[in-house]
Image: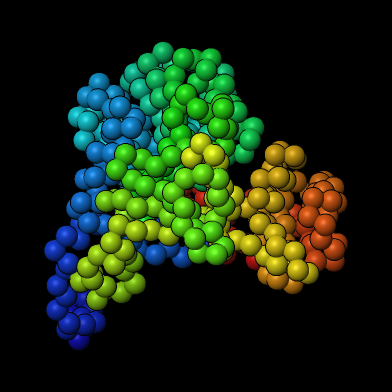
Length: 359
C-alpha cells in the first residue's frame, strides 16, 4: 500500500510485526574494506563492558579531554566517546578535515589530552607536520583500524618519546565492540608491530591449521577473542533484529596471527587474503607491507589463484616493484601484473575499498 501527501510518499512494504530482542541496543556497520558492510548487533552489555574496559586500560579520568576525530558510527569512534563518557571526561568534537585551520586552532586552544586515529589519520597528520609540533597538554596517542607502515609506526613511537607522552596501539573489530587488544606504551619499541595482549576481561587464543587451540607459548593461526564485549551476531534483514546472542562471547576474528613466547600477538594477515599461485601460498597483507616499507608508497594487492594484481600510486616504480615481488616470492613473472592507479577509493575512515578497484 502507498500513501501520498504533496511531494512525500510512504510505502508500506511489510505487515510483519517485528519484536526486538530485549538486549539489542545498537546496530553498527562493519568497517570492512569490501565496500559492502554488514550490520552488527550490539547488546547493552557489549557497550557498557567495552566502555569500562577501555577506560580501565587507558586509565581515563574526568580531567581527560580527547579529540574525537573518528565518526561515531565507526566502532572505534564510538569507543572513544563511550569510554571517555564512562570516565566523566570532556569530549572535544571535531567534524571537518584535518587540513582545516579550525582543527589546528582547537589543538592549540582547547588543551586536548589525547588523539585517537587510524593509520590514514596519522598519514595525513604526518604530511601536515604534526610530528614536528609540540602540544603541552597532550599525554596520549592511540591507534587502531589496521596495521601501520613501519616508518609511520616509528614516527609515532619517536614522537611519544620526544614529547613525554604515551603511544598505545590497539586492535579491534566491530564484532568485538571495538578494542580487543592493546600494546602497553612501555612495550612499543621492544614489541614493535605487535597488537599486544587482550584487554581487561578478555582472552585471546590461537587455532592452528590442525584445529588445535592454544592459550600460551609460540603459535601461528587464526586468532580467537573471548569476552563480554563480543557482539550478538549480524543482522542481514529486519527479522534478524529478534535474534538472540548467537556468539555467546566467542569470536573467530579471521585474522592470522603469530604469538611469541611472551604471549604478544602479531597480525600476519587475513584468513581470506591469501592466494595460491602455482602451488605457492602468498599473503596479500604481508606482501603489501613489504612493498610499502621498501618503496614508501601506497599499494594494494588483489587477485585470484591464477593471477595477482598489484596497484601502485607511483607509475615510475612499476617494473622495479614487479622485480622485487618476484625475488621475494619466487613467483613466475606472468602471474603478476603491476598497475598504476591515481588514488585509492576510501571509506569515511580512510580504509581502502578493495571492491571499488577494478581488476
